[in-house]
Amino acid sequence: VGDIAGMGADLFESYVGSIIAASSLGLDIYGLNGVALPLYISSAGILCSIFGTYFVHTKEGANQEELLKALRSGTAASSLLLVICVGFILPTMGFDAPMPIYCVIVLGLVAGIMVGSATEYCTSDAYGPVQSIAKSAETGPATVLIRGLAVGMFSTIPPIVIVTLLIVVSLNLAG
Image: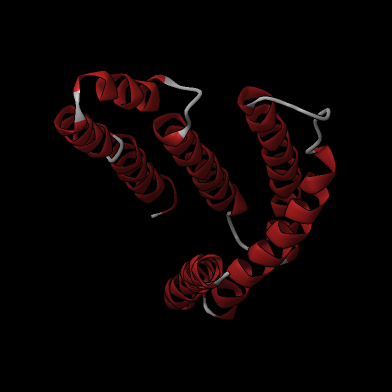
């Protein structure tokens, strides 16, 4: 229980830290609307996530791929609803040019889904990287360590590339 509570606390801290960072930057650029926007979007995101849980279902005895598909359907449903919600939030807050901000928010959401998918690919036993680590166990523990280290190092590349591209595109779109 302590380990799970610790992971939950870390996740919550990252979530709150992201909101505070976005609000701080928003204050500098957009004033009080910039502070409120991350709060409104995160609030809408929580509600959309709750809505998305209704799309997560499988039959009894589902395998790993079916479980992952169910989780993806919940992510897709909540993400689409959030895109719609943000489309209503931005204009009602009175931003002068809401479209670039909207595009950056949607791109951030897409990038988050892409990072999650890359993480799923590198850590799920349904895909090649983990299967290759398991296969390396046939030759001994040293090859498991070497292969595991290699897969771990590889798994950092997609998030770095995705986040870097997102930063460049976001700066070009919304300054």
